[in-house]
Image 1 (tube, rainbow, N blue to C red):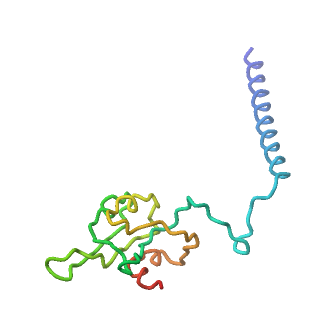
Image 2: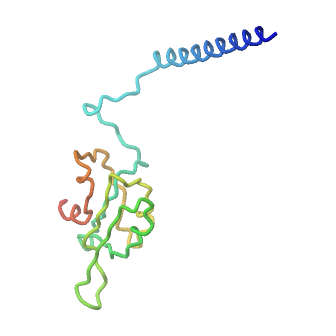
Image 3: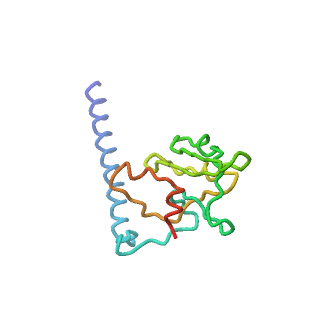
Length: 152
């Protein structure tokens, strides 16, 4: 009786493996004859959907020709990855604080968007750029205010 149970289990394992192999081959054959969806990047570029969320960037407003960041620090406090550092300064005692440095480490940023949502001045947005590539980890630490000033 023991030998027949072992033999039955052995046959069941072989049949289960054969079924798994047949399912895998069927999926492979189906994909073999379906249309190609791979794009030959960089020769051909994808058009990004309107819902695409790239890296975070500061917005330049037309009225002031600069950002409206007041260095309140809400974005740094809400960031789950703790990658945002904001520094601001006042020009004189009674003025509003103005954000001078907005440093973010994109190598650790999860692009969750909480910083964009919480900004009271709406000075942050997601960019449409999807080719943000660097050769060094240290190049991913970017000052958004400095980058905004460098762009035309």
